[in-house]
Length: 265
Image (cartoon, rainbow, N blue to C red; front, side, top):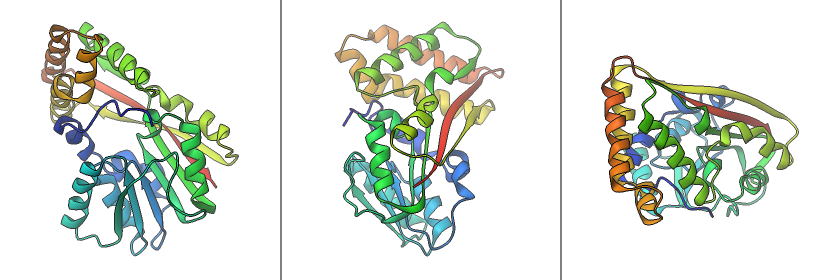
């Protein structure tokens, strides 16, 4: 397993809890039907999982992640929404503990960019998917991020994130590689697409900018940057201040590019 660059600090989970099926899995929703059995790989705090569970109910959903602590948060989300068709467990996507042909749909959001071997991960996702079923994955492409105004410290942030992610064995520009990875995993029926998040109103800027202003100082990435000499404390504080400047600017704009694949098993 590659190390998870972001970690599970509150500032990271704050970002993850913002995610829904509608804003993060719209490319998949039209393929879902009641009664399907679905596996959600790398479910995090479970907001997307809960939406998917509602869409396939009374079908069952298995949600897996590497971190036990985040699964506890995901289970609370499901309980608060009255969902009784979801189970949570720890798992490694490179070696899933499910039998062949178990699921109708296998889904992963922002997972392949962080794993040691994304092709093997996709092979495992295919193995546990029934013939004719769907393997769906969506990952961001960091060098496809576009923001305005161009604050120099945000360029420093991008460079630092790229270095931290690669030092951890990940691929931060995963979005553009989704098709190639799926082909290498043996899929032949693949529908690739792209979509974006756009953060350009006051609420979205406050959420994203405030989240990264905290995250660059307190997350696992910040700890790594300090420990490995990738950034100074002053540098991290400069980046944090730039995120707050960006979020307060009424002209501020950020688009986040994602690559997506729908693969028939």
